[in-house]
Length: 310
Ligand code: FAD
Image: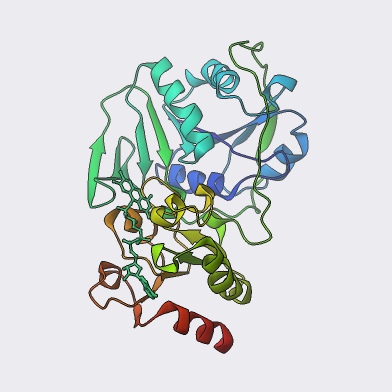
């Protein structure tokens, strides 16, 4: 009952969500192979071989795998899939792109955004924007799972001694073409990987206020910046910043929700944060229901004072 984990990397290093996906797979108690697909990925494969608890690194190295096109990756995974009872991928944009294709090809029901492993065929996953945790048992012969990275502590990136095996890569499918990628340049930690997130909502009133009030606090704390959907929809920041049901799922050590009411769709993206601090002028705002620390006050007064005090 070996498990295949589809590894996500940025052509330089393994993404942290892969380490959390491996942690989830380990809870099944079977051997794990990790697929590293891409172009010129030998160095990544060597560093991945040190990840704790992996049996083999399967390296699929070909020019047409360079840009992570799901159609080509799917073909690579499908030639391996019959060896495995489980196929795991991170529930990131990358994993969500490829895993459903694998599930469809295998004609099985994918189990998405798993937050706990109850048995080899039974998983917990949030439904209704995280209001309910469903326990889902698969009756399929093979199981395709995407893993919510914030729910599993990553395995150690060192200490393992996996063997590295090159695998044959199927030819390019020719059904899609990489055109370009626009990557937001951040001089702050990445939102989903940050230890601290400073998040702002509609209460900030404008993009200019968002930058002048929140950015100095984030800079002092070494934090990533996040936002509610209302702030994104109002154009304060781009949708890369959105936290929530239709944004990013974060679980940092510290989450500051500033001028955010705490709608259920926002909570779905941040309520697993270790410590939540809410600043809001409305003492009845629902965000105080999940906050560990709450400050009722005008953010335009309170946040600069806080920034000064840090
Ligand atoms: P509001 O609800 O307007 O709250 C603003 C808050 O700021 C208020 O509590 C107010 O008291 C406070 N405030 C105002 N001025 C000040 C001040 N000077 N000082 C202190 N506090 C102040 N939302 C998300 O965030 N993420 C999602 O992924 C998401 N997905 C959605 C998906 C669907 C299908 C739907 C229907 C909705 C989704 N939403 C999402 C939207 C969500 O329902 C809320 O509308 C949104 O989260 C509200 O954002 P907000 O808290 O910034 O704004």
